[in-house]
Length: 245
Image (cartoon, rainbow, N blue to C red; front, top):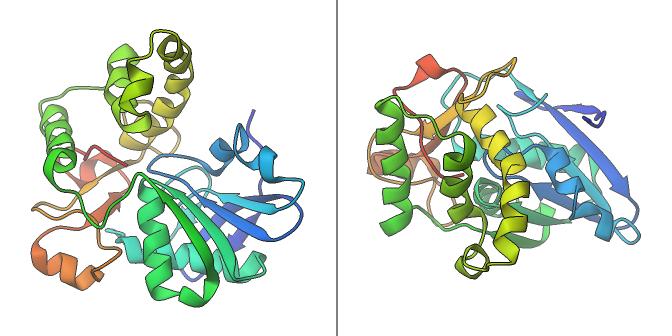
């Protein structure tokens, strides 16, 4: 069941968010395809007695609406988050990010350091390289050939990004994890267009090598390198979509 969430209107996006608990502020920034409510199953209830948690849908996901033209570099996502924090939180705040959300948090720390009390970033880096980049490139090629990552294929594919190797190889733990994994995978697939949704969304990487502009480089510097992490709102906006989050 979807949880009713209010909206905060920023300079280019109407952010769908919810706050629970009381105390100092924590803002949770989800990975690619993750909705704000995804944090409310395990994470935010633990902190509710002592902290106020803010969760939200990034632009392109859930009920958040954005009027800015595509593509959207990480700096745009970071501006959304900064405006949300200024509007509904008492800064500076604790930022917690996962995957794409961690890239956004890194950019917030660069552009708006006065808002950051501390930042906990998971599954991230300054840019994609090595295996991580090849993983994304392989999915782009797979999708360009008409492939869909659904069912157990989707679970097995995305689990490698969601869980550590020791969990994947655990004979007791993995059978439990793989039945919760489809909930996470559904968010990815809705975003990438493998499932029908009232606002079909896919995302990808601009043609060329690179990764996303965050941490130690600016958006224009990433563009000069030939690639930056961007979002596209319909399947016709690009030929194939990227892996990763």
